[in-house]
Length: 266
Image (tube, rainbow, N blue to C red; front, side):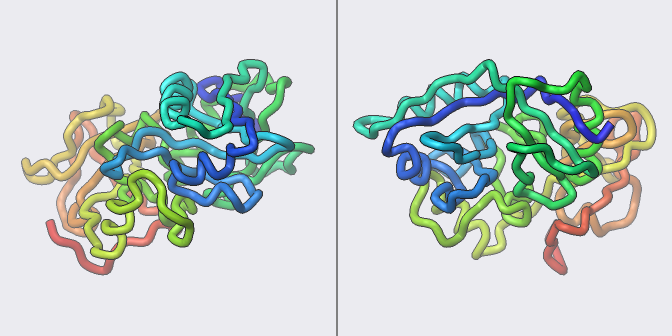
């Protein structure tokens, strides 16, 4: 079904006259455009902590965030509030719905990452369909799935496609973690990528090492059925030989949106 309720998502609301300037100094994308964006909250060292959609509505900003991270995101935002005139509260009455390959209903916004990703809606009337179909849709497109695919305090944005998927602004002012993110881009320091994989065999648990001829070249992340996401060294995407992960063999399927360098070191 191309419409699904996402029970693993939650909604936070930022209110107050300083809400835009406050968030602008914290997240990776430009929230002052007036359009919905996908953005990440980083450590001062530029490592991923959380990502969410920022949706402007009248008088506030709504954050479509991973439910398991909502409380921590709220606490982090409040910690940085200082004298800013900003309020942060949970909106448990709002549910997140995603749709694709069907017309968007009133109030929905286009997923800013990819046109193929479809639309999202924050409302108090979710459909009965669960998120399993959306998970298959996400994996097919190769979209990162928050904490299912990234490691808090460890992952860097450009490994997970935040540049190609419009999750980083290179023209806005400073934000927390900007220096490492910019240096990674301009110096070409990315040596591995989060990529979708076809799984031949039993789906390996998250964290299972990926091996080629006995040498570790990556790690399994999220998955469902015969598809998943894995972090792989760039050289492993070009070399020959099976990529073994537990009892399975992984077949990388690099999506069209992903830009890889022409050559990579092992």
